[in-house]
Length: 429
Ligand SMILES: NC(=O)c1ccc[n+]([C@@H]2O[C@H](COP(=O)([O-])OP(=O)(O)OC[C@H]3O[C@@H](n4cnc5c(N)ncnc54)[C@H](OP(=O)(O)O)[C@@H]3O)[C@@H](O)[C@H]2O)c1
Image 1 (cartoon, protein in one colour):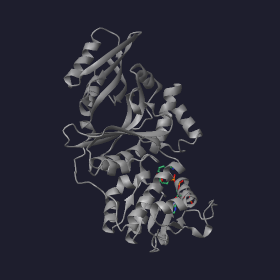
Image 2: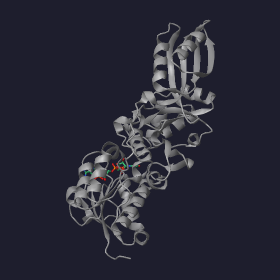
Image 3: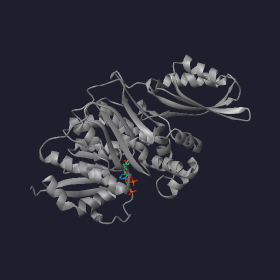
Image 4: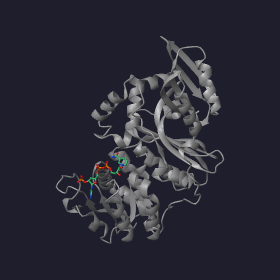
């Protein structure tokens, strides 16, 4: 074993960074044995230097992250600051000064992954980011390496623990959205400003990263269709139950049936209780992968939290250190397929549509005609009458999002349709 240590600069020492530092210290001997050289924490960049940081020698702490990555003797920079800047500049500077990088930063990778990969390649360095998607769950490496010989057709997952916690609460207790969100906030599962989670921004960043890797194609954050889950109601859960389904916020990356394009989208959807993703409870994450040869695979585990996320960061750290000792780099960006990313209108799925209609003869026929005119085939219809009003629940066969949008627009213009109470996609069948 080499005795000269590999030097690690830790940028950020918050929820994730403090756990990375702790495990690097407590597991130092095992890490050294697995890597073939000791790893040394050479510096820790933070914003507030006076904060007490257990287990970290005060002389390692600095507020000058730039000077730390420019030292010239750093082998690996671990970026767990988050956000776009200064993380982006620090990572590119790290490459320029000869270091490889491990990051947990989904927002940055979804936005600037291509440029960061190019910078890593220019400097013969590694850029690893297992922790950026689904926390502790090994997912990036299985997609990039274990499945590199297969053809992935679909990646569908619950990649945000906050929203899964809220939806699970609504499902199991009958609570409304706000009540479930309040509980998630009180228990520390939701941030004071939950927008990034509940509006699907966080999941969309992860979908962009997953789609890019799965389909060997650049998928930008702007390419991902995004719909949050704030409009999901207790009534939607009741409808889902009647269909033997539950509701999850899903990130779905799909290859089109003809293989010529891909789509990436995030939205709430009904899934059958028999689907493996339906049993993912609380703040857990899970990703369901379908490929030509392997068939169906499911990756499940904690998608966030200090220690679980640090586990993924340390796995990357070991891999990057091994590469460095071997004078090699791991796989970089693979975007050779360069498939077009289709707009949401081209996505094909089933729909559950709940309409408030007048309770009189002929309404059902009128509604059915509108569906037929737009080429959307109906699977089931359920009607419930009440005091001259009625609700009509229509479940369709697979149709494009564009055809469904046209259908809904036409339904809204019917005199007999008082309102479209909800539209929910049905996945996983
Ligand atoms: N938390 C999770 O469960 C989780 C899961 C998966 C991925 N991630 C990702 O991991 C990253 C870190 O998340 P986190 O939850 O650990 O964040 P956090 O608790 O807010 O920690 C951020 C750290 O960065 C430091 N920092 C902020 N601005 C800085 C600057 N300009 N220069 C130097 N240091 C700076 C902060 O310093 P102070 O300590 O002085 O404030 C803090 O130590 C993010 O990209 C996040 O998306 C987090």
